[in-house]
Length: 401
Image 1 (tube, rainbow, N blue to C red):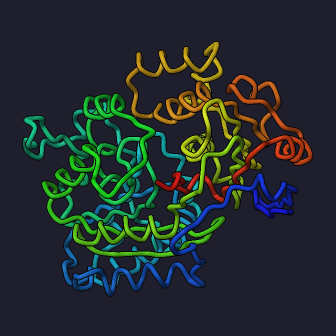
Image 2 (cartoon, rainbow, N blue to C red; image 1 turned 90 degrees about the vertical axis):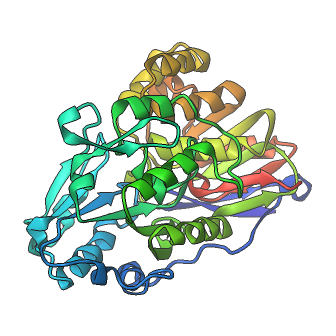
């Protein structure tokens, strides 16, 4: 039988024996909102169990907006946030967009001229002068956080809901902490990564992030749940009470159960290849690994051409996945968590990669390069059991219990 699957801006139809196909199920397949910007406006005006955000603002307020740069259609989603602040009388010069370390900020060029006075700041976890002491957390550690965020009268978090190796359910409170904390806290967090399946019970890091959010006052969260490719499926606004609803919707759209483990998983990344970096490839590989038999095969289908980065440099410099993991643990760098994900999967399974990367680069990333979809077809045809996962970088797949 033929199975259609989208990757990048392409669609492939792969032939697989009916008895070899492993089926997957999802509670509520993600839909594509016709107007994501309108959904953001509605989330600000009609938040989850909370009055409109504008009622909490005064014209003299300084507002910090924390930006998640992995958001689809980022500029289009940010504009209604800035317009809402303006409707409350907040001057654009009183708004600061806070970006995570290593920010690219290419999306800034797409903002309308009306917001040219809005400031932009990249978080510097190493710079003590740009951090503020908030209070002592329940475990006795100091909460040091971005000074601009701490000083703001209102903190707005615009972030994508995604599955995360530290937090389980990323986004929301996890977009705040530990990303915008101090370097010592981020280093400590880098030692607690996991490929376990996120469950209904929050992971310790998520509980810490929730505590940090509470200690920071009452951040307003705009949670975005992706649809297929570059679309948006849901937007939820609100304070801490809205976070559980964001996690519920994320799981409803992207948690998939499969009947049994597979010998081969075809994991695809659809949409604009410019949005698919090594982090997205690693997320897709992790997703596939959870439903694979030991020493299984992962076929990653993408058109991605990830730019060189500290993550790719570490992987390419290592002789094998085990050596890469040793180096990741030695550096204790929170920004290298993607390298940990990729190397952990590559140590356990064989990765075949269709991408825009040169063959020698793919090989240095511990993957077998594929030149075309025909090579993927031959691997599928030779598999005793095969599972297909669309948009695997967004998906949580697990075997039915």
